[in-house]
Length: 336
Ligand code: NAD
Ligand code: UD1
Image 1 (cartoon, rainbow, N blue to C red):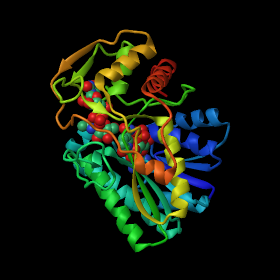
Image 2 (tube, rainbow, N blue to C red):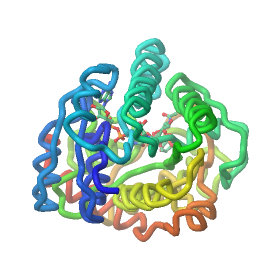
Image 3 (tube, rainbow, N blue to C red):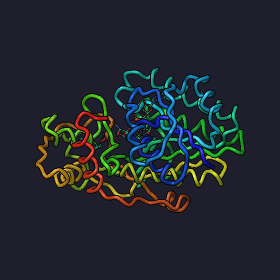
């Protein structure tokens, strides 16, 4: 086990996972079409790790392009992050989302089969728990979705289950991420969404920078301790290390597994704002507005399975997540 292909490896979670993989002694090959990331991420990963990695600007739907990567490199396993991820955009452009995320994954899987590469770690999401389950979410609960993005995750998990049944040597682990935030503690890698951010922490970061006026809190009448939405925020470097643990597990365990990656603890929107105020040393103005369509009150993980199967658990708290996000934002006011 040595060489790992990371699809979507210049993106937010992929780039941090490259650092964790290299730190764990793996060789990393990155493939990304750069539709939502910058090639500068490669230089940053190299700066942090002092190691070289090979980058291919390739679209995951380009079969010959992916074949070329497997011909050039003996790939032992794939960690598959590449995909479009904006919930609202997926409602407006379902065909683009299904085409990119599903066709792209099928193409990756076909080339893996051709080259007898049988280990895949996939970026799934807590969104597969839909709106009907009760917290804490456990992996054996039924899955569903409320938008095309969420359905791509539900469908890809099913595809992986079916592939593992048909090809008994295959291992596929779908990691169901809760809410990844934060940045590498060097401030060299982090999250920089295009335009006005949809997700809470990147939005709060821009308010702290003075680029946006105030945080609009989507609803304060939920049945939660302070009335605002509760989520399981996880430091992106904890998440990255979870992938290294999943890889070690997959090597010895053929078949399909879905595993939650979260802290097991919920924090409210106001908890996040207060932790960010502490990190940046400024007051962050908030305004209470209506609930956002499609949001649920509370989401957090049951993390028992990750502990038992992967021997993994998180180490960073919300304060550290906000401190690292703020460091990255200050050092990279215009992103990478
Ligand atoms: P990201 O947008 O930063 O990274 C995804 C990368 O995939 C980008 O660099 C993009 O350029 C690339 N990509 C997209 N389509 C491609 C294609 N056709 N060919 C090649 N590259 C392509 O997003 P992220 O936050 O790092 O998320 C990584 C994965 O984790 C995604 O699959 C996402 O759905 C999933 N996920 C993310 C979150 C989150 O909150 N960030 C939560 C749950 C699951
Ligand atoms: C969103 C996606 C989810 C995706 C996840 C990670 C939706 C409906 N869900 O989850 O599918 O897996 O991101 O990318 O988009 N909030 C505010 N003000 C803001 C932004 C957010 O109050 O400006 C609140 C939300 O109501 C929620 C919490 O902050 O309670 C977290 O929101 P967000 O960061 O967007 O993540 P999710 O909604 O959990």
